[in-house]
Image 1 (cartoon, protein in one colour):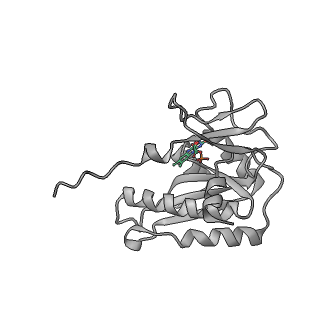
Image 2 (cartoon, rainbow, N blue to C red; image 1 turned 120 degrees about the vertical axis):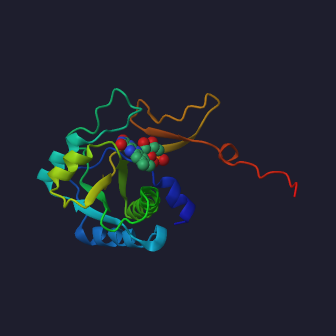
Image 3 (spheres, rainbow, N blue to C red; image 1 turned 45 degrees about the horizontal axis):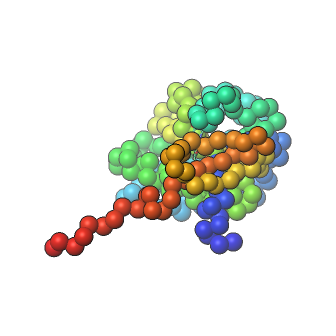
Length: 200
Ligand SMILES: Cc1cc2nc3c(=O)[nH]c(=O)nc-3n(C[C@H](O)[C@H](O)[C@H](O)COP(=O)(O)O)c2cc1C
C-alpha cells in the first residue's frame, strides 16, 4: 500500500471488537517498530507495557478519558472496549535529556507503531487523559517508570472518515447518525507558512 494511503487511514478509533484479541505473532511484528524511531540524543528513554489481560483491562478502562468533543458519549460500551492497551512509559533513570525531547520521541514512536498496526488492521486511540498516579499504582510500576501515554488498541468496530475543515473553522471531530466518526483536518494552504521574501 502507498505510504500516503496508510497514513490517511491510520485514524483514531475508539470502538473495538473487544473479544477479538490479535494473535501474539501480530503483536510481535508491530511492537518491533517501537525500537526503530528517531530519539533525541538517541537516549531511547521510552519503555512499553502491552496489557492484554482481561481483568487488568477492566481496571484500566474507567481511568481513561474518551473523546472530549463528543460530550454526550461516555466512551466505548461493554463489548466495544479495547482488546489491549499499550502503556508508554518514560524511564526517568535514563532521561538526562529534557521532557520535551522525550515527548518528541513519543510522537515518533507511537505514530510508527500505529502505522504498523493499521497495516495489520489493528487501530488505536492515544489517550493522554488519565491519572498517572492511579495507572502507576494499578500496574505496580517501578518508581522510575512514569506512564505518559496509553494507546487503546484492537480491531475496529467503527468507521472513520477524513474531512476538510470548513469555512466555520470547526476542528472538532464528530459522529453522524450512522455512527461514522468524522475527523476534520486543515488544508495544506492553511498549515503552510510562506517563507519571507528574499531581502538578504
Ligand atoms: C497526544 C495525544 C493525546 C490524545 N489524548 C486523547 C484522549 O485522552 N482521549 C481521546 O479520546 N483521544 C485522545 N487523542 C486522540 C485525538 O482526539 C485524535 O488524534 C484527534 O481527534 C484527531 O483524530 P485522528 O487521530 O484520527 O487524526 C489524543 C491524541 C494525541 C495525539
